[in-house]
Image (cartoon, rainbow, N blue to C red):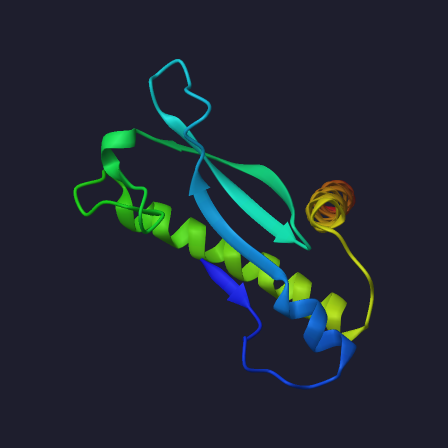
Length: 145
């Protein structure tokens, strides 16, 4: 779990207040059971009492998950990989929250998840454009040879 902000902060800075009520963590969503009897891992963003979930695209069997610590048990297959992905996602969202707070922009749990999806689409489109340009350049090089 990544908890942004501290209870002892007494600053009147509005960006600090925005951080204090935002949490990001990964949970095994036990209210949904997939056809392979596993539960999906979801990123949970909570802000001002509102919660939004987004799937990580991973699932784990409930016997391999510690629901107290929200981490895979030591016997879980691919435990290290799951922990790595979980940490990357938590850090990704934490950075986005810190950026928004530093620019003093308002955001909600829903808008934070939507912004991450929009950012991913922009990256994907940039990659597609880059690959097409690379292909065109290689074709011109082959034509000249």
